[in-house]
Image: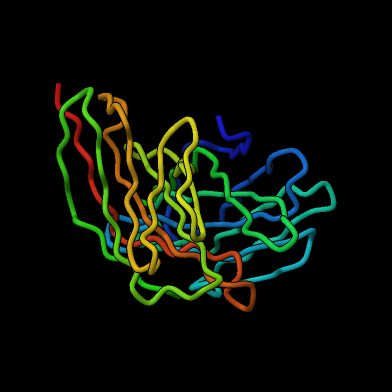
Length: 115
Length: 113
């Protein structure tokens, strides 16, 4: 158990719909990262938030957005869903280490199925 | 980001050491080598990381060559539960790409009874 929690575990929805995925980081971690894992693209970085502010962006679609709240939990919003958005979505968190690398710890993921 | 090259698959007998290689010939001086694994469709699990020196923890050992162009992850006594995809990742230095982990295809390690 990494200490990172994600809800829901599974989500089934239809094309054109909007969903929200939720992530609670490990206690004390200020950074939250979102990754997408699809069969054809592998694990891909989407976006990072640090203490409520967007810090880094990957290949995140304009239909997707995220935010980090004052209590440090994060939500990933996916809208106008397409069949190709079906994937596993992982959240990770880390604590900043001065002068060093921040190890990311991953949650169990949310499996999104778009029908 | 430094690119990594790993063999697509490896086999190992249960109880034996599993040695997973990774090439990262374009690594920069301040970039770390990280290893994660993913069992089935679970979230990636952190294993170990290093900069220059060899590292050991309760899960594995990491051997980094002196020129830092390659590394080897060693699972000293592999068990069936170590069957997973193992990812070698070189992390970017602090900057615009800071924080992003770039996952390649990894190595599928299969541990046999």
